[in-house]
Image 1 (cartoon, one colour):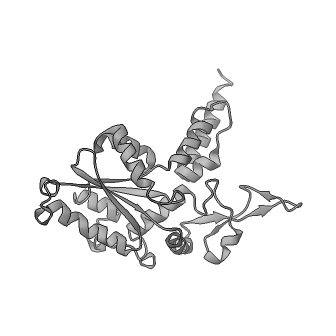
Image 2: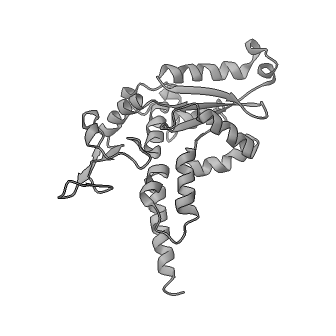
Image 3: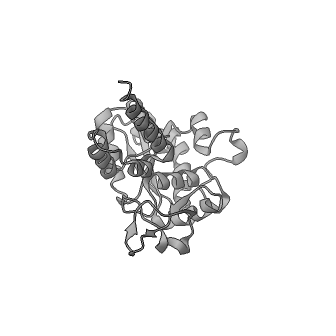
Amino acid sequence: MSRRAAGRKSKAIGSDEETEQLLSTERNSFPDSLASFCIVFDRDDDEESGNVKSSMTKKIRQPIIDKLRAADLLVRETVSIARDEVFVLVSASEKRQKQVAEVMGTRGLLKLRLRQQDLDGREETNEGAWTPFKQYLQPFYEYSSEGTLFSSAQQLQILEFIINDEDERAMGPQLIPKENILPGNTALDQLAKNQVIKQCFRLHRERSRDWLEQRWVWQWRRAQPIEAIREYFGTKIALYFVWLGYYTTMLWIPA
C-alpha cells in the first residue's frame, strides 16, 4: 500500500494525530536511514486484561512476528491508543537490503544509477546509467538525495519483496504457504483476506516528507523536484506528477 493510501487508512486505525505521533515515535526506534512498514493486528480483551494464554489474537500474531524476526528483519511492536490493536513495525538493515537487492537485480526488479563525471572530473547528479544492483559495484553507485544507497521507495520495495517471499533466495519469513495464496495475491494480501491481519501500509520518513512539503507542496512557482519525488514515492507517482506538471503548463496557453 502506498503512503498516500496509508494516510487515508489512518482514520480507520483510530485516532488521527495521536496515532500518527505514536507510529512516528516507534518508527524512530529504527535508524533514521531505514524505511519501515507497518502491519496491524487485532487485540482482544483477554490480552488487554493480561490473560495472554487465553488470547486468540496473541496466538495468531506471535508466530508471524517470530517468523519476521527469524528472517533477519527488524521488528518492533506497540499497542494502539485505543488498546484494541497492535502495530508491528518492520524494517531491514542495510546489510540485509544489499543481500536482497542483489537477488532483485538478477530479476531486473531493482536498479541503481552509476556515478557520472564530466570532462573536468566533477560529479554530475542524475546523469549516470542505470544497472542492476551488484554489491561489488557499490563504490560506483550514486547515492540517493536522502544520503542512503537505496532510496525510500527502493527500501520499501526490498522490504515487501522479503515479507511476501517473492524469491526463495531472499530467505523471507514464509508467513503463509505458497499453495494457500490465491492467484494475484501477495502473502500480505492473503493474510488480510484471511483476516489474520487487519491491514498493512508504508510509514513516512519525517525528514524526507518535511523536505518535500517545504520544497514542493508549498512552492508552486518552482520546478517540481521530480528526482526527490521518485526517490520517496516511486517511479509511477513521479511520472504522474511529470505529466500533471506538463499538462497544467500547457493549459496556460488557451487560458
